[in-house]
Length: 519
Image (tube, rainbow, N blue to C red; front, side):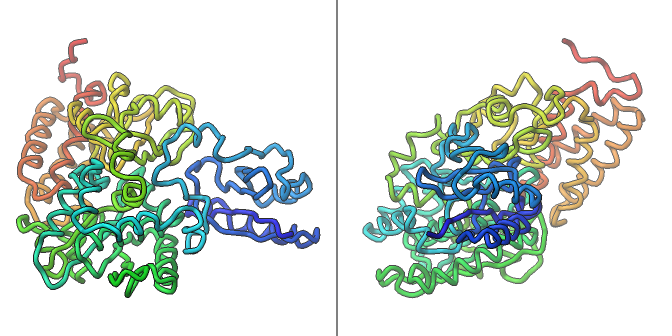
């Protein structure tokens, strides 16, 4: 009887030698006369254990990791194909504490299914959400999304149901659904893990959105740094058309939805929805003035629903289980689960899906296991390169849109980057300006000029040149950028800068003339 071994082809696993591991398992099994079938999956998100190899046994899957090509012979000798004992044996993946403590509503198939197999996706519960949506009127589908409390997971947190309703009510001969998969924030990788590991979840969510809004065409705008995700999506879409879940007459419903994946050119600003639409139309990616909003006048001037990967992939669960089931997770106005991406100086980096309300400290300590260096945590940046730097006394803040805003921070895309006590926060503040200056589309003066002046001024502060006066100038620049920038690129750059100055003032005293803050 054939033995199934699962080897990830996630980008992290590939970078750590997963292809060589797969080849070594196949060759070793062949030498031993073992009938082994290798299935390439995504990752479950335990990135410090990649490549994590799993084998199907009568008791369920058994995981081993991290596996190198040099480990394979020893694993096969120890009975890998039967789940035998070995130093790298992790047991059942779902019982590993990092996974067992999570609330996996969206990512439960990642690392489990063959990403491009419609049959495998359906065997693990896929397309039940779409089937439920097709039994409802468009208003009923939008009502489920609205009542679930789902908010845009791209960072803005705008209620998804309101945006869907706007596109549904818009009158037009053509409507579009566009997925923003231009995941450019530092320390974020949830979109990539989903696209590489369970692309049909995204495809299903977008198809449900098309049914709800009356759209017949859709585009996934994938960042150029994700070639593996791009190929996986392209193959999944082709297989979906062949299986009748995409294209004309989806699932025999009489409804049509044609989907394409487009590759971006590496511009961070194209994560902003109007810049993305400009790029999708073949133009330079620069921000559009709003109004009109894309929901009324978006791609090619037509009503367009733009959501990010994590928003669309939450939808199948909502339609399958109902709005109430999803809304039972979370707190306050932040309902459902948040895909948290833990990176930086951390022992156990990876993907954590958990209900809103978990604190930053719980994520770092209960899931991350503290810093990789063993030194104390000094600063944590939440929400990507435009997110605030939190010191230790703010780490008990819940990951909740309103709670984070109250502490002058943001949830963003759910990325958490950890720094130990060797970090220089003045240099981090400078980096925020430098990042904005590099990635700005250049359309508005506060962002284009303000960021450049910010770098120059921070260089003076770091060099000890009139630090008090120059920090006052930085504060003035930040106020102008916040109030005058056309989009969040310039408008949020002051958040990491001012949080670093406010929460870590000692790193900005270089000339001795900056007064010490009161204890």
